[in-house]
Image: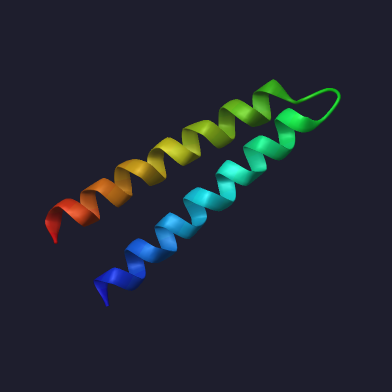
Length: 55
């Protein structure tokens, strides 16, 4: 069960990374959006580390 939680967090982490790459590929990337996505991605990374560390 715990593995499903980690998998969901990792999936979301990869999805956000794709969004960041998509934003960078635009002619006029939105820096504020990129920074917001990076903060969210870092938060997810911390959650993944916390869940994986407690396993």
